[in-house]
Length: 206
Image (tube, helix red, strand yellow):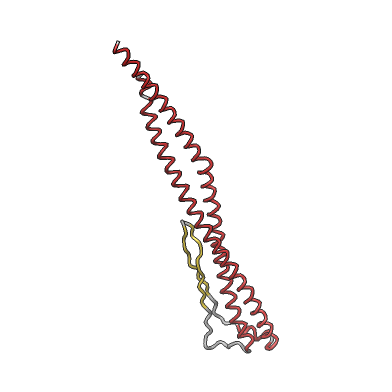
């Protein structure tokens, strides 16, 4: 009797542990599903922004190429070399984080500075080409930022979905089954203990 009675507290301790583990797993799955929704929403927004920036990039690049051809036809290839400043443009990328996922958020553009000694574009067409190419590069940078952000968010969404699937399909059902088995064992043990007590009480009356 003492041997069987000593297993009941251990079973109750196990039941408490399993209940806590199950509650933790359920909360974890809920949080991961919330994270997954946010990741997918942000990924869709980034994909849409990348598509729009890509269309703008291609349009402005086509405009720039058109102006470039006109400028070279008007002034020759030497005029093209004169139109290019010595300074270089600069693109800076700012970063953000969503649910622990660090990703590019925006691109800032700094135009190259033409010194006073440098010649200006020799014809209007090349001046238009310069403006159009700068706009195209800005759009290309924005496209790259949104595309990279979407890819990073999508990769994290895949990992998060796998973790949710592991919890919902494997870990949580396993904890449910283990908890049910422990509760059944405890119920049987308590029933047996009650029977023994009634039997012992009936003998003491005799």
